[in-house]
Length: 157
Ligand code: SF4
Image (cartoon, rainbow, N blue to C red; front, side, top):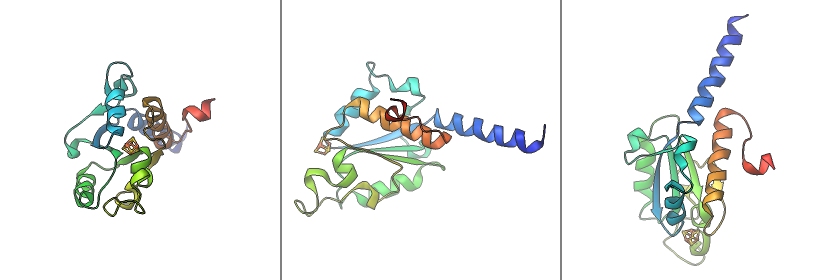
């Protein structure tokens, strides 16, 4: 067997392991945070996917943004993102985090039109609010993106 075979296999194993050990920080600036809390609870048990909640950005490689992002909060959100481990990923949960939602710039002067204006978002989860299953689907899609496989639930149907 050639050395490149072992290196490419090792690379795939490392990517798979990375996708199954995401330690996340979440922001909760809106009602979507309740759905995220549900997901972390015993009913949905997010930890079975290897996702552990963290409170320190220096120990996190996944940022889950739930709810609105205001212009006032923008620098703090970016500061959190900059302190996170590399490689790092971002999941935007709900219409507000995706595009400003019902508080879009046409309706509110203080709301950023989506978290993508502040940090690079890897997966957007639609809904107002999205159900916990939808957030879980977004996480599975992110795991697939990291490991190089399309594993979202819609892809499995
Ligand atoms: S998307 Fe809907 S449920 Fe989520 S924070 Fe915005 S208004 Fe609330």
